[in-house]
Image 1 (cartoon, rainbow, N blue to C red):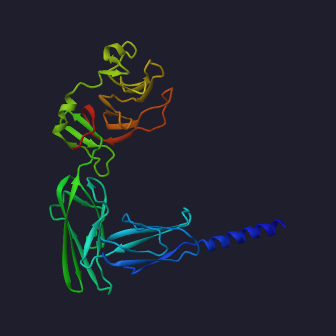
Image 2 (cartoon, rainbow, N blue to C red):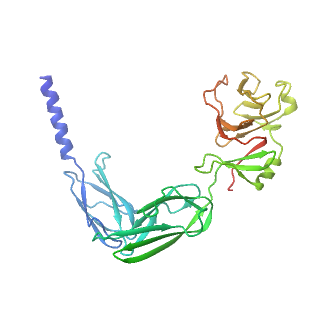
Image 3 (cartoon, rainbow, N blue to C red):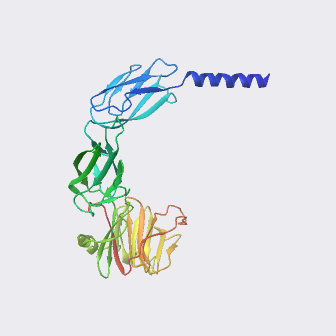
Length: 342
């Protein structure tokens, strides 16, 4: 009896799944911008229909017709009876009679991947030749995908530009078309670490893809010239180096965050603000240190380079995060955090 009951439940579930299948067809399958597209509802059941066409337009008709005004790739979704599990999505590429291309984002920033995709209307399947180019120079843009003859190409920009030109040459059935578009590439607000060595002042963007190496930056000088890790106001009280030396006798410099003091004294240490639970983070001499109060990280230098780790949150200052080296600059004398566009 129990086995029969289980089989009956399984049969009911299978029937329900079959009864509630959601699907639709698209005609034509390769439409052009401005051409009506019919979406035929093939769902096996349902009473309420919610369509989204990926261009901001919606419909509640069972089998609507929609016209896309611009070429591009759109995600069309049908939801039946407003149930999350009764949903089907399909990508639809809308072409233009004249070859064109699109970008994966409308607003571009440096150091971020963007995909440029060719849209070539080719109902007769003629052979196609494609070639991408970036006419300014080979420094402002770098290819992530190196095949300049593919239907799409992925790139990132290395500096902000008012006009960054992108060109696509298309040869189809012996006819050549060249498409040129310009894009504005914005700078990106990122945390930077300013580093002074015995030779130069550097800026290093932190955790931005492909921008990891420090570069010489003379504009870093004012921040690096400022007095560092010798006095700090915390919770309305002004802590000074001389005062803290009564608790930490070998103190060379310090920063305070979250009721903890990070300090340089024959290495790098952390302690509670009252001096309890002093724990050494790095045994090598630490000539410079700074706290990133936005992302809650500490940066410091030793003879091998510059390092970082997250703030320590335990009451006894024991930590599990492993210090990570971010460069091998030597002779570091000062560090500063900066959050401006450079």
